[in-house]
Length: 241
Image 1 (spheres, helix red, strand yellow):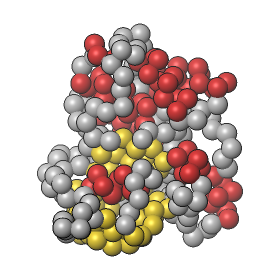
Image 2 (cartoon, helix red, strand yellow):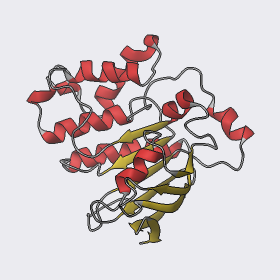
Image 3 (cartoon, helix red, strand yellow):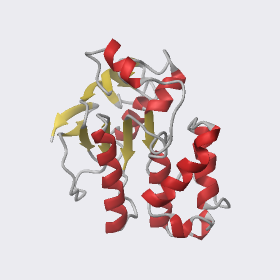
Image 4 (cartoon, helix red, strand yellow):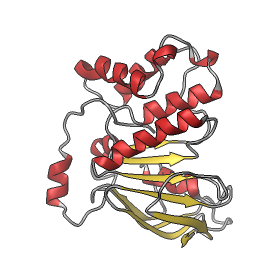
């Protein structure tokens, strides 16, 4: 679920986390194994992945191969059967609040929006869920409206927006505070060239503060992004693309 980019967070000192864990990376997935049922094959089979500071990594593969499952484990939304997900060396079950403040997840599709809320009210609602301090909610939302080119839509209801406009709103929610790790599942869906440029600028902001981005999309999608590494998932494991 989306989390921090334009506001301020309380209770968290990432610089301390990095100093105390110098060998840690923004995101590390170690030996992730996941099977949905005993009679089904493994979705993830001891999958390993490390995202280095200031980098974007692409993971592709055909539909149903396990990309979204990997992202949901990385986001701390579901547990793997075995293995470990870490953000700066800390797993979700060790400090849930800290983990969720640092990680933001944009799921595929159009989930997470309330049809009858306006864009501004949707962002305010999300800011509170994302643990933005009450004193900073208003400024955070107003900044997001400008950053993600939503100012003209601020008072429009979600159910009266195009799919591309809704996707831009979902992207604004993803970067609403200041996430250190951003997980993107097919983020270009319904975006025009201007929307894609807004997304790319937001990714650049994460990298500039030594965060990391994991971008998943189907193999064959045309991407004009520079990636530090490119992988595909095959039989539950990552293979260099």
